[in-house]
Image (cartoon, rainbow, N blue to C red):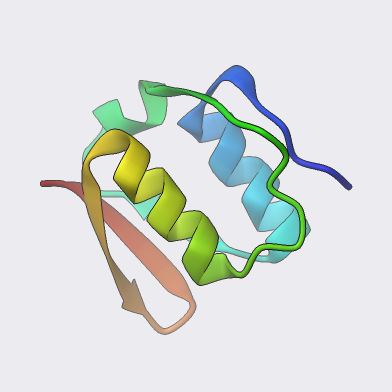
Length: 74
């Protein structure tokens, strides 16, 4: 399934990533979930690449705890 976003909230994006890539993403600040994202297709990218793309776009940093990514504002 091709993931393309046009102004979707990160809450929706993270839910899709969980279903498609089995990624568990937790925003340590709930405000992060309200940010909206517009992307070209993000097919066949690694989990690390997707997380880095999100972090670069929204000025976030992340840590990984097992299979869970924690996002925080820089």
